[in-house]
Length: 309
Ligand code: SF4
Image (cartoon, rainbow, N blue to C red; front, top):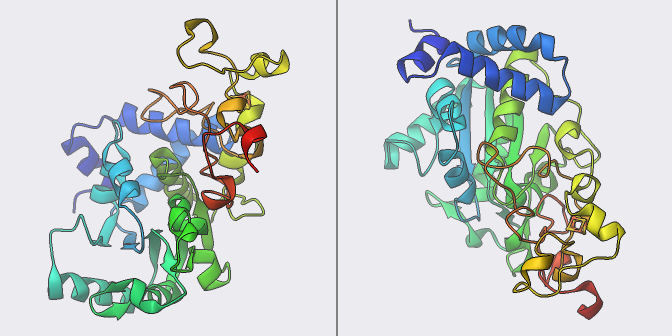
């Protein structure tokens, strides 16, 4: 049988790229970099063996989109090709009864990782039905035998944008009482965080250290404000007021509604899309999407705090 690495090689991902990814994972998780080859070896041995169930509740599928738009060796290669993804409502080839059969078989065998994308309605189960059953019921059933539950994106972690609506949307930890749940909040999920978490889990057979909100501490230890490249303008009281003034484009975005002071994330250190950019550098104030307050508690997002009642 083809090993996990042979499958990667077949897709044109070199061992060097894979090692680079593992080194990046070690750096992001605060692990000694000299351990990267061991992590690569252990993860490689376990790739393609660990079954994954990916469920989607109330959401926009943006987290799956985010995953599919990432770089080489793409998280989508790691997750969709190398792990054994047994159920993913929008990406799996099977549909209808075949798809449900695959889900049920996987649940009955146990020992899988459950990934949740999207929120879960609590006001009335009819707000989210999948295959004729309330989604909450299906999710709870799948969580029972899962080794770990990973909530990807703000909706799955804390309810996200749907929480501001009338469906009583909550995240996985509220439904499961926090048991086994790891939160990877942001809107959408940051793919390298998910890959890093999976590589860590596959190589250590344990979860990394979590913070009080069940987030891997290494990714969410500091506020965006702590590492923001606009910070020195903030210290000087220089705030961007007019987007059309080219002289102030790098100034602090606080008056444009930046939530960086209240938002724990490593976005300013580990940029998105393979280091291409992140919200702050693209000129957008931080919306606070890795916090439980997002979206409702931070809205209106792009308004000077002085003007918010
Ligand atoms: Fe802080 Fe936001 Fe200003 Fe950056 S832009 S210095 S995160 S308030």
